[in-house]
Length: 254
Image (cartoon, rainbow, N blue to C red; front, top):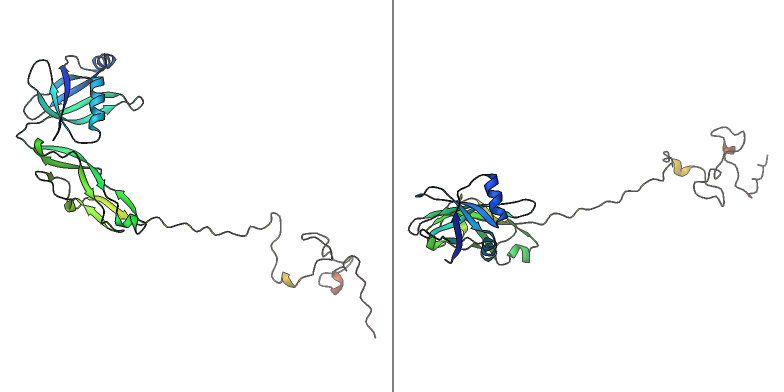
């Protein structure tokens, strides 16, 4: 396990005003606490911490705190507070640990391999747990917890109990807790095109197909296409006027 180093100094003032003064001096307010020591207020060099943070990334790491006077303390980052707008570091919580005592720490997961269900069955890989709580000695602390998903098929799940054992590491989360799963892709939506009636057009009544035919040359929807003859009564065979240009029907022979 690689150890990182960070320079710290003691600070006396507390509260918002004191913290603002520290930040203006490019320092970050911090607190160190542990089982065997009282909480201690510290100040961390800002640029040095930014550089250290980039080097560590998302890995779990042990940090040796160096100071001008006093022994070096071994610790890890328990919590980091950042400004939601400027993203600047506001405060650090550091937990002291001992080389010969087990500690409890959250460690990030790293997915390894391409799931069979994604590559072959078109599934989607979902990560349910991004960090796990473990107990171990400082010397056994892993940078990350690797989860191999190569054999994972659609509908299958990897739980905490199925993770590869790490020497000296004890998983503290529920054994049945889901870590990663492969699910079916969402079903494609089928869009049915509906026939939209022309605005203002009346729906045809039952039996309309057997109604009067439009006049020759009349355009669809023309009001004169099937106009009733003048004076005709509804239902009269003479109700439909002849088309323009059409010859009248010959009178029936008696």
